[in-house]
Length: 409
Image 1 (cartoon, helix red, strand yellow):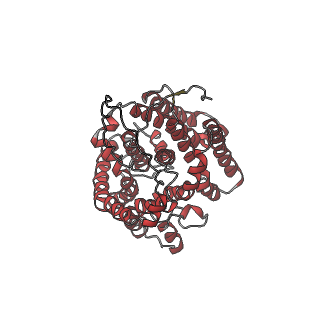
Image 2 (cartoon, rainbow, N blue to C red):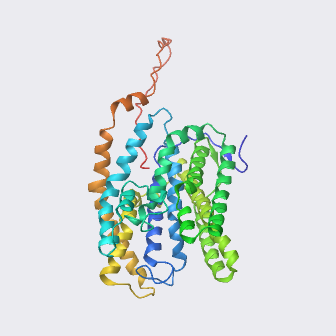
Image 3 (tube, rainbow, N blue to C red):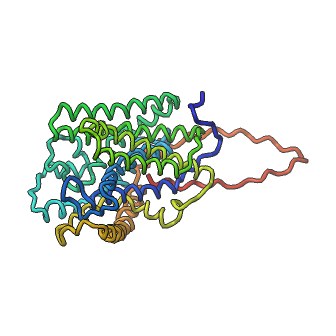
């Protein structure tokens, strides 16, 4: 039975979605802008009144990453693939650039900050399990931004089993489960804030389990689109709605009572997740129809490919800039510094991608254990002899099939 407001479409879904690769850059740049402008007092490199406090919403660019991870993994999911292949490729995709960026992070967050290294906490960040423990020191050990990779790690661990299970459920069931999960995020945030100390409450809201509904939202969306469901939605609509929400959110924080503001804060993660899903849906539907836009241009796609490396190093670079030159004046000229630093970090991200991430991933992928590849291959179906064509029948034209380039998840 069709979902309310959706219509069925038999359009074949492409494997590669360049527009989503481009969107990853904008999400990473939003996080960079958040860290650049700072929060909670005189933090960050500098603030521009033109974008602050609205730039703080950029912290929730990580919500977009969680939703899009669930979407892309489900979009290219192969139920017959051996789980070992999936895990092996995740290691090659994530760890090489992470380990190199960690060196810069240790220099920025420990050596230049004159902070004593708590080795168990630092080692937990090497293996990306730092958010699983409430007692790590400092709160975000190692390369601070990799707390989100620690969240992703749980989803990676569950995905081979979760993907098979979720793909067997009806779309309507998935929508209900996803909605309940997002409501639960609000409830957990509220309960943790009301009943725990600020430190433990913050740890609860960084715990990977709390973010699983956002991954499920991406998975549900991917399955709905692959099953042919469409909704009339131009990309500009969810983008404008998100902008209006951000404006209203920060205006409300200045005018509403503390209790109401607290409720706004508790709902911001689920709401940003929904906006992220709508933006993804709008651009995917556009690309499935064969339409192209600015997100499909070579430059934006390349920026999207570098976005993982950009994310890994951007905060370390900003922190080192503060140590070296201090904060800049809080006026609109900070925008020029923001853009200039963003360009510099992109050059560094290109280098990290070109000389570490991409070659290391290819090298690692070529060494996937063959027994996993053989076990994961689809069993060949026995071929029946083809019927002899009638003498008058024309010879059928054939075209060789091309293996689609895998999506860079």
